[in-house]
Length: 275
Image (cartoon, rainbow, N blue to C red; front, side):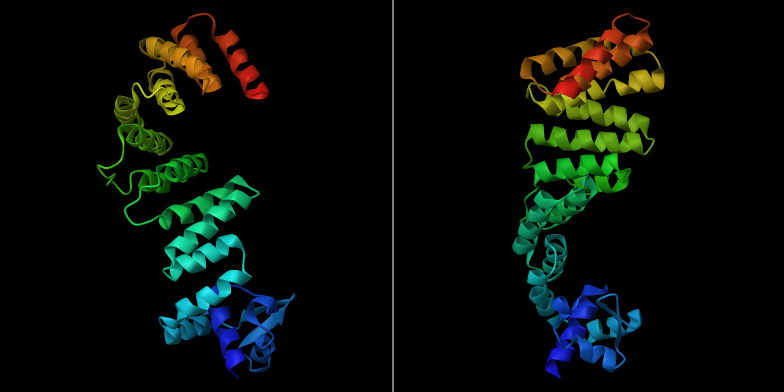
């Protein structure tokens, strides 16, 4: 029956066990025909090769099946389906909704990646790229972060200097996580050149973060003392990244053999707890 074929099409497109609500009542025909089995309230194709065969036969019609499935699944899965169907605007909308509704940082990250992938053609989508890139670094997926924030090495000329600095700053941290400390230092300097004078949290974060090379690699913070002090001053002036700037200045003082670092760590803790 046509409804049973549709159920098989949907099951093959989803590539996972699916409920009768997602497949339709005719899904029961699939078990009777030996095409799928029913377990714990879900239907599953007997063999992955069978699903691949169905997809091959569907061809471009698979996109229509994906579109019909989109209202029946989660926001995130709908975004994936609509993106695969070439409906970029709809996919982005569902991905952003999934990001807003995410109950974990990891789920938000995955939704942001899909949203960025479906941005309007020619749009860099800096805000989402920066957030997703930072989260990828946090999860140790720094090569993915690097590809995302550098647009695989092709940041368009249309990107403003400040936004370019933000993207490069995230790329610098990716190099750090990947163990390329020299690349980190070089990119931090480049990012700071673009961010200088922007008086933003990003400027503070790059300025303060650039001192990591002195404290973690050189193990001598004296060369970074002026910059770390400047970062704290700017952070206090604009009211952003105050705790992070203090943590970095504390590390610089500690590795320079200077006093005051204990008090700075305490200030950073107080700011983090009461912000």
